[in-house]
Length: 110
Image 1 (tube, one colour):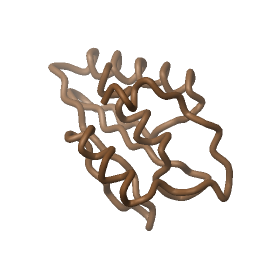
Image 2 (cartoon, rainbow, N blue to C red):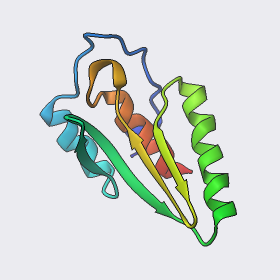
Image 3 (tube, rainbow, N blue to C red):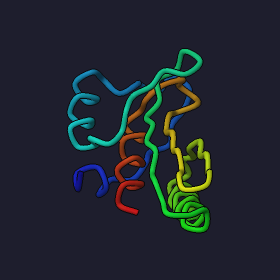
């Protein structure tokens, strides 16, 4: 995972390449708690984090927001009592980019 967390996101533009199958396989070995899910015909990285209460869930959500702003790459976040669901994908290319795996690893570090 250090390989991913030591990287920063690159600007993603329309037409940027999706992560290759080999990259995805390698990255997923480093992110065992994440799943690739398809929603609205777009692959996304998804993980549910659990907490003991709502306050801790909100605090975690804020930490994710800070790293998202720092990297200028933003997830979908659902904050509920005792859990936070985070989904990373690259909107502009409608799928998974290397940036998404970098951000998933940085989210795990929190």
